[in-house]
Length: 113
Length: 113
DNA sequence: AGAGCATATACTCTAAAAGGAATATTCCAT
DNA sequence: ATGGAATATTCCTTTTAGAGTATATGCTCT
Image 1: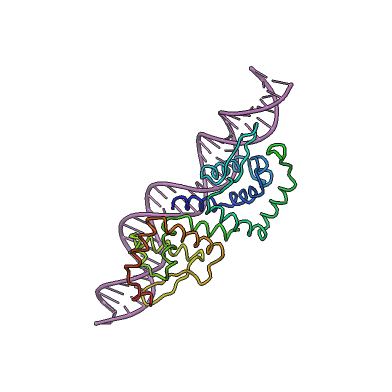
Image 2: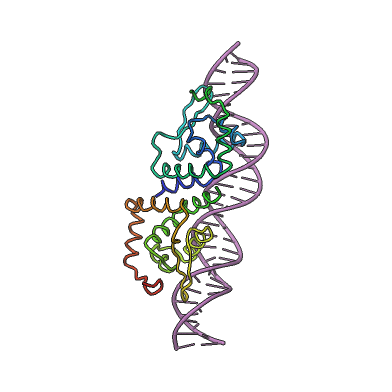
């Protein structure tokens, strides 16, 4: 049950939801998330770290970038709610804008192809 | 998106999860929830009120009982996660114990048949 | 080794959340 | 109208979460 609570805590913050929405499209490094969200670097870094500590996402170091991504197989409860997030993405303006900015971002340098 | 966050906030507390688990079996008044959870009355009342304020549950006054229940059609995100809670109920000892105590409780007086 | 970019951490502050104890309210029965 | 049961609310305290600013660390390249 604590695992459930942990998942829900991760999901009840606006910034973290925006991050998860982005990561569903693929891995991203901190600076890209930061650019897309338009939020200060420490804020983004801390929330990414929060999600990682609670095992919602993984990270890999690549040169001086840290690439964050969703795990291959997220825990079931997270996976279920990521699907729900995708439904929301069609209605929620901020999500759509984030995805639009993501498309306009070249992630190949840091994150590989 | 604020609605999503609101749902997740409701779900990230142990007491509230236990309450929702119980209410999936049917309506209950405060004193029964209190007995089953073994928690102090103000705590239970406050959490029920919290869930109601956030529109996760409804209440009806019956004599000097207040009966709380899940709505006929919970909002989709809640409904999805209530299903997940049911999966958890089979593994989680505290949920099983709550359900057992629920069975041993006569709710007919306050909550109707 | 030194510069510069990317990221992480520390510190401080504010606000929100949760619990406990006491009290208030509501409704029914007598 | 009074008492008692059920529920709600208030007050107080403690904890937790999030934001902002500043600073530190890590890595790469020259």
